[in-house]
Amino acid sequence: MPRLIKLSIALFALLSCTTVSANDLSSLQGVWNGVWHIGMSSGKAVLRIESSGEAALRFTNLEGFDDREASLTKIVVDGQTISFAAPSQASVEFTIRLNIKPDGQSMEGGGKYSGAGAKLVFTRAQ
Image 1 (cartoon, one colour):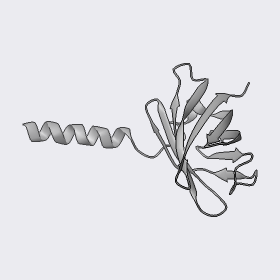
Image 2: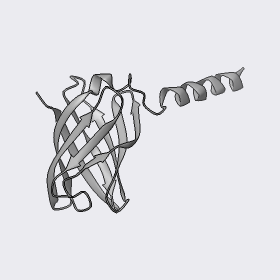
Image 3: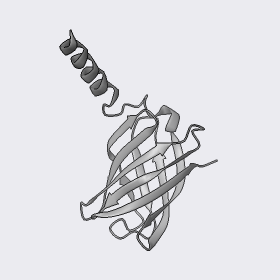
């Protein structure tokens, strides 16, 4: 019996943390304005999440992104957390994990870009 319980828990954990579908992102759909900080550098960021489940991120003042919109990959929603990757022009991924605040109007978290730690904060655009 304990083996069956462990297997059930593992299966539940696996199913609750799968790659996102359009429905998982529906509550996050829209435009999010934010800021990023890596060491002494910082800039603005705009996160766009579509009803189709596609998403993109644009950074200002971040080497490797040149103010262009990067299509997000590896999008995962797990409870009150969203994580994803934004590939730079040099194919270096900026991996990001954001905590969704209970009011659904802001997200904040961190990430890694070229080995450096990052802090990001987003608020839903009005």
